[in-house]
Amino acid sequence: MVKPVVFQIVGYQNSGKTTFTTKLMAALKEQGLKTATIKHHGHGGKPDIPAQKDSSRHLAAGALAAIVEGDGHLILQTESDVLSLAKQIQLLDFFQPDVILIEGHKFEAYPKLVLLKGQADTALLTELKNIKVVVYWQKEIKDIVQKQMKVPCFSIHDDAALSFAAQWITKGFH
Image (cartoon, rainbow, N blue to C red; front, side, top):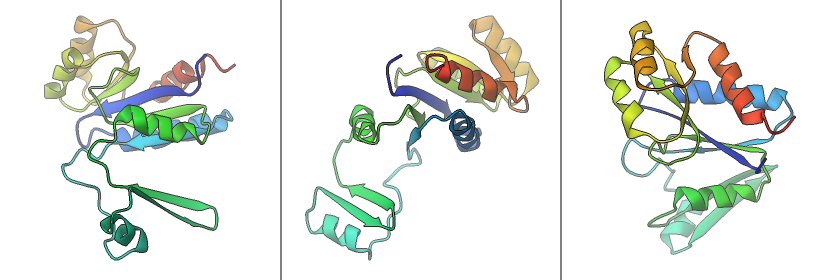
């Protein structure tokens, strides 16, 4: 098994990505795995960063990157025209995680879980690559998924979705 295992949790806004990702992180931690995450800020523009903080002032003055460290906490900020997902994964590799969970970046080709909240979201089934599991909010979505592809499909209310994702990620570790 190649380490780290990279796995995506994708879907449209308010489909449950963050909730599912945090539950999956807890399940992986219970199994003794070190997990790092990348969250795509897909709402347009840059993520909010307090402008008056020293690290922001360093960036404004021309620093390529700024790290703030204190009491075991580390915050990295960088200003870059393009910090590709591959470069972000490479950066996290420094921490030697067993797993990197990516929330978002839906059009990347890593293995992924897709969350479908409404029937209109099923368009993702033909737009995305490397779907390993689908989690749906409405029962009728299950039929649509099963007609289009042969992947496991779970209700958002079924803990088996979380178990399946954790097992898929950990299959090479045990």
